Length: 309
Length: 331
Image (cartoon, rainbow over all chains, first blue to last red; front, side, top):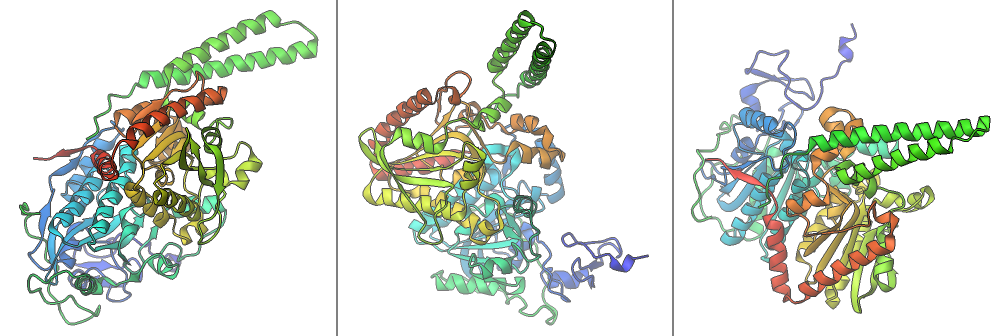
């Protein structure tokens, strides 16, 4: 009884009612979509346009020209400088789950032939939280962009600073912002893309320092958490509060760009800011959610140590 | 890269909790005796003095333990001298400036001009109240974006004239409200942080009370980071940390210890350059002595920093933040 009143929760992909792997139920509209079709559409629901979250690998694969990614600093991994209860276990679990060393993947690659330094935060690794490793890798990729006179593109998806590294995490806001400041002095373009969700310390540092700030539709973007704000102001917040569209309306970001248009949009911006085209790109990503069959998302190749960058 | 901290002294934390419990008991006994003395017109003077002596012993033992939770209590003490008190006491002829030129004047931030040891400087700091009325007027020292933008405007003024910046930091957090979000709280903080890493004048920071996460860092990036002995500086308030970790805000004491938010811990982590000692029992017991200790430390650091050419100053500042953190290299 009253089953028809229950609404699916937004967020993770629900697998309960559908055979594992083959079909995926959209958490927003409830449509059951063939998993392969969803992947072809960059994990955007072809029925309602809901943007499922992407891992760092999926993000880079959806953004870069096929086979052009050279990962940097893949071996950097978190220690437990504070000897914080349970941190080592949480790290081990996240490494096991994601197969990655920490919550960000950085490297060099091509976007429609434009060579760029790039990084993507991974929300599946401890909520994409920024501790020393994330901060260090953002600073290093910014410094690599500086050395190579290349643009920088950073995709954010993060709950904020990593509590388990205490004030060291907080200082990563300063470290990353300082590195972005050097790009500004060197007049190199930095494009920041906020994905669902980008909150806390990551918004209060590099994510909001982009020369151009983009966001995916429906992404949660904000500094303080909804619950904390509601407790403080003792009022319910509107449904659309802190969404990408809300931020656009309030003048906080430049544009909201659907995932299927992100690659050409970034390429257009990079070309505008003078990024030279160094190679031919693969065919453009589908512009329409339900366009004709497109190539599958291809995982990035094995990480190659970068020599020059 | 920062050093690893040593194992936490859990014994000291447990001992402090026990001492506090016993102190509370003794204080309750003293209260009960006093009430009985009044009611029954009896003289318990001897017993009360004995109990008070014991309470003093417990207090003394507690002071010697120096736990993180004591620092939290002292950093938030209502009578602790506030940033505006330090600014008024440290600077001659302080002239407050107002407004961010964009939206309004945020009463949670004090910013202005003054003379420090005969040199023109610019000072910024949150304004925390000492009572409820004052706190409401100044939003409990929790700035809105316009507060950070006012601070930045005044710091850029310092840069224009080559005057050093002194930032006195004591804020629980950036204000977590809907209007603050709408006006770009995150952007205001990010902008300040970035600009402060590149401000072409010496920037001296002294954390005197609560260093509340990004809301504090937005005015706390500089060349010399000083911290009062009992101040705290943390990525999240201990209550919030406990609520997230254990879904129990009452375990804030444990969280305070786990977060390593004391001046001593932050010095080991190479986030803080120098600890400024406080009078025994806390800054509120002797604000004048505390101010003089802060003045001495600021004078010394300002003198040292003034010797560097600007580009060297900025190179050192970048290197300072570039170094902070701890990571390992997986083979």
